[in-house]
Image (tube, rainbow, N blue to C red; front, side, top):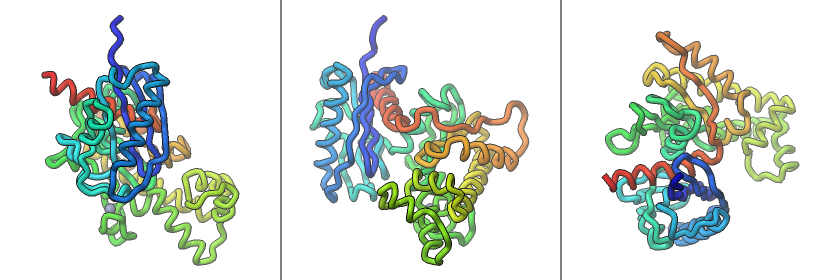
Length: 329
Ligand SMILES: [Zn+2]
C-alpha cells in the first residue's frame, strides 16, 4: 500500500502550542508541544517555537521536515483563510500578521492558516464525533465559547469567513457584559471565565467556597476547569450553582441550534467538557432535546468531542490537505 505523505498540524493557543504529524486518515505519527511564547506584537518568537516543535515531532515520526507535504495551523483571532493573514489576535497581541508567509519562510513548507475553532470543527468532522455527518454543530466550552457548523458536508464560513460565532448568541437579555461588548451572550454566562468571574464575586460577598483553598493546594493562579471539578466534587454550593447555570444556558443554546440547523450531531468540546465529561454532556443533551421542536426520525446525537486536545491540530492537517487539493484541481 502506498503510504500517504504526512502533514503537520499546529494548534496555536494563547497558552500552549501543539504539533501533530498525521496521515490522511488522521492517524497520529508523532506529537510535540510547548508553551506559547509571549513577546508582544512581534510574532517572531512564536514562529521560531512552532518551527522547533515541528522539527521535534518530525524527528519522533522519523520523517524529514522537507518530506512533509504541508503545514496547517489553527490560530486564535480573525484569519483571512485565503492569504493566511491574521488581522487581529487579541490573546497574542497580534495585529496584521502574515502568519502563513512567516511559517513558509521558517520551514519551507506550504502553510495554511485557519481560525482555531474552525480547524477543531474540521477535525471532528473528518476524524471524530461528527465523522460522515452532512450537517453538524460543534461547541467548544472553555475560557470562551466557540463553535462552528458543518453544512452540506463542509465547514460553513458565511459571507466573510465569520460564521459560527456561537458563543455570542444572546441568551440573557440585559445579562452580564461579554468580552465582545454586548450583554448576555452565552459566553458571558456559561464559559469557564464567566463561572470564574462569579466565583470571585461570591468570594467578595463572603460566600463560603472551597475555591481559594483548592487553588492554593493545586498551586493555580486562576480558576481552571480542574479547580472547578475539585470544588464540585467537594460539594461546593457556589460552584455547583454556577455549573448548573452554565449547563442550563448551554442547553438553551443547543436547543436553539437544533431548531435552526437540524443537524445529525452536536459535538461538545473544550476544556470544560474535557474535564467534566458526561456529567456535563448528559444534562445538556436531555434539556436541549426537551426544548427542540419535534422532527421525524432519530433524534440528533449530542456527544462529547472524540479527538479532545488533538481536534485543532488534526483539523489543521485537514485544512492544509483541502487547500492543497484545491490547488491541484
Ligand atoms: Zn459576546
